Amino acid sequence: MLKVGLTGGIGSGKSTVAGLFAQHGCPIIDADVIAHTLVEPGQPALAAIRQAFGEEIMDGAALNRKKLGDIVFTYPLQKQRLEAILHPLIRTAIQAQVQQCHGAYCIIVVPLLIEAGMTDLVDRIVLVDCPETMQIQRVQQRDNLPPAKIQAIMANQASRAERVRIADDIIDNAFPDAALAEQVKKLHNHYLSLSTSRDNFTCEQQNHL
Figure 1 (cartoon, rainbow, N blue to C red):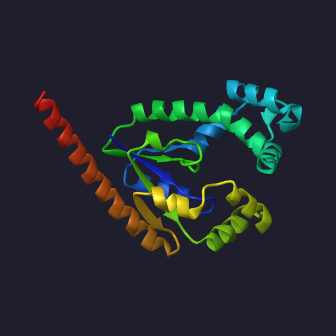
Figure 2 (cartoon, rainbow, N blue to C red):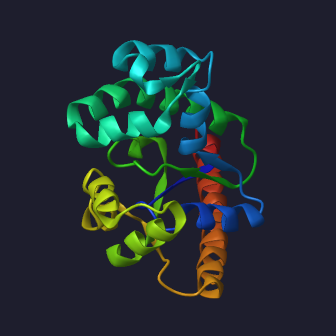
């Protein structure tokens, strides 16, 4: 199975694009969904986070995501501390879910694909891209955050140039929805073709053993 990593900055439209791929029947693995599951009450990761950050980030048995978010975006060392707990668990969960996928290819949505050092988990990288001014505008409308807070989050992520440099494919999400759907359709067909070529190459290799 071809593993395609889907990434992009905050507000770039990753979830929208993943939904369009899902409409073509492609399995979707979402690192953010995995991360949310890992910190649910009773999960070992939450216990480790509680021990590392103290009771101030808890609301009873549940994690106060806003308080934790404020800490990690303000203090880089605390961000690294959280990532050291979560990233290995997210990596393991992604690998397990890939094994359960069926089809020509799967989409693995990882917002911090570069930052988390997870590019080795995928065969190909597709970037959802748009101008940074558009990212800020979208996040303001979606989350009602002040521009300064959004810019602080963006500063903690890989730059647009870094993402473009490592991407195999780029989806331009600065256009209307119809154009976005057409780009996804073309890439879907492209990934089907790539997967078939990979399978044929593997069979040829095995036949020569």
